[in-house]
Image 1 (cartoon, rainbow, N blue to C red):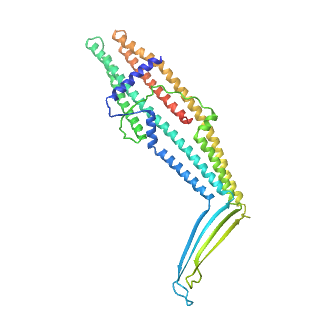
Image 2: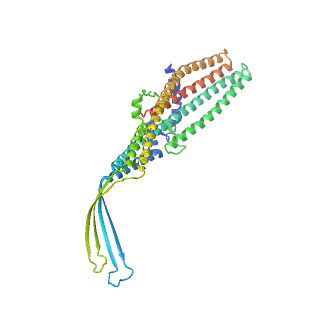
Image 3: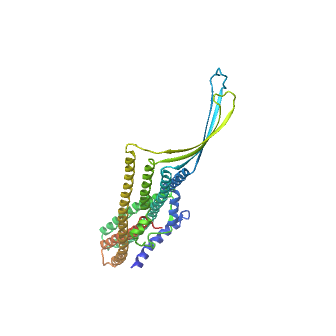
Length: 423
């Protein structure tokens, strides 16, 4: 049974190869090569990479808060008029200083950890975007493959009807059939040719989408080196625990909780004691500047700041920050629920599409045998042209269903790989 379908679909695949093989200028591409071309030209993925680089710079910026800072300031002044005491017109002062935060209430470490959490989250965001782009690439690739098969199947269907029309026309000229039979076949041929035009348009649209995703010229034709009629591996089902560990959106939701917790610590630290130390120096002229002489001075300082009473400001600020924690926790629970539903829906779609594909095997074999018998019987005068036309209609419908089933299965596999973050 499977062999019959594969032989029948192979005829279509060979027809496509014959059509495209005459144009050597058309590029050949595998699914993995197409995915890579989409990755290389995807603005969404480029933005995800830029966001990751931005988060990395933010983390490194926060890390500098652990280190002492060197600063310097200077002033130069000049008088608008000379004083009666004989002071000079000008004077200057330069003050370099080194400052180090000894204890900032925990804000320095909390801010760094929050930035590091943001960088980890940006890495998972890049992974999520790449999974989405891979699915989009798979869909475009399999859709173009399906449209090629639809078009080839319709071309073969038109050829079958033309063959029948020649037989009916010959028998009509010999007086064996009525003109109504010939008109019925002509009507069926006209309808098939109309469908042929519509499917050509569907193929063009699929090709445009295929090229647009990889930022190529819209009309650039290709030869797909893989097809939906090829054997596509069915992925294994993933447990809830393994799925949660692999899904980037779940990891990002967990990191959002950690980020909110660090945010609470940053908020609380503003109301803790803070200790800073510094060394400063100065080189400046005497005031008033009479002799243009200068001197150097310096000082070491330690400062302590202790908030005492702010009318409950700390309590309200911390409560607001903790609300962000609860929101992040609720978002994680919601993401876990969505994850389980998506996995269940994706697995059901995968199983159903596989069952439909298997069912189409038997139906296509029966339709092919029925078409052969009806055509032979008509040629022997044992069946009417209506029987043949009905068999042809049944064959093309089941033939199309077989292609659709293969396409749905290929897309379901890609979708399940995306939602389970499978490589």
